[in-house]
Length: 335
Figure 1 (cartoon, one colour):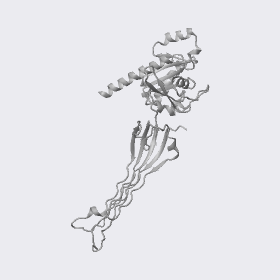
Figure 2: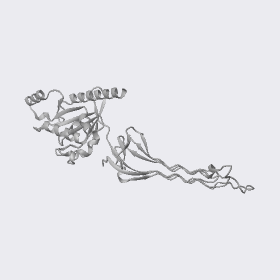
Figure 3: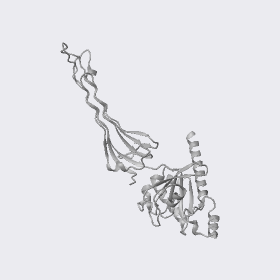
Figure 4: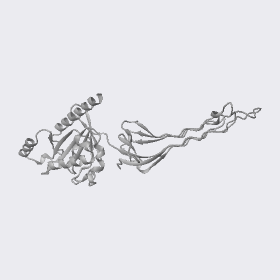
């Protein structure tokens, strides 16, 4: 099962209390204070594990609590620290405060780690309170409490290119034809129920990560269909690839609807560099193809995912656009 959104509660351990104790040895009936400090409470961490690709495990366990610190002991012995808890998540997980929607961490690389709840500090034993005027302090600090937070974890796939299109436009067929991914393909709407990632190899031996999400339909921004809930997975992409169904007479109208739905979800999506790809041209004759190429001009790529027509041109166009975007990004960040 693919799960990309969960809410969990994390609680760190409280610090152990300090100890009130006095040294008692033979012939030393009134020894000084020797109470040790309490141990530190365990913390809760969220850490990336590149072997994971879903938040499914967190769906069934919603509460995570670290151990409390142990109390201090006599003989100036500190209590043991509480054990930490580490929650493993896939790359691309964003951590939000569930109560105010504040973004706390964006965990992208393997082993990236975020301290979600810090353990409480252990209390000081009575040895810390000895003074010239108080040789036998009977005071020790209680341990500090831990933290309790409600978090929302959102998985957003890490990909270079996002495929956007209506159901049955051929997105999954294209992903399969251009990569080694094996998405489910069938001739009915919403074949793709979960996002898929494929690795596309270019002529320059580079690799491009391509993400396919369930098809978007008119009204998706109001909750219709399946595509809207997965749009978060193309927010990280550098390039969008609009896939239009060349079998339909109004495929250009589909393009307008797709852009409208993306803009309603997040206006930044329609500002991304993009390529418009008309699929299923194997159903056209030469005259029809020539007319459409002449009418649309540059900026459109004509393909048949089923028969592999035009895929080399598409790979080249995608690689060039991604490269241009990365150059612009590097130039902007260097300013």
